[in-house]
Image (cartoon, rainbow, N blue to C red; front, side, top):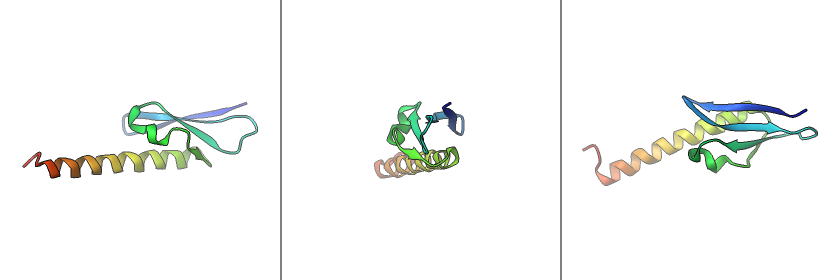
Length: 75
């Protein structure tokens, strides 16, 4: 029997992790384009997948903030 878990970041459903019968790792499937970079990554457990999704979201926010500052947005 396979096991699956929803991975959420804030109010976003970032994706799902699924472990098929006989597999040792969970495979990430993105639910939103913002998390496509994690698509297909394997994780030892759902907690690690959630941490990776949170880190990815944080990095995206930081990048967008720096890009906006470079363009002079919000000055």
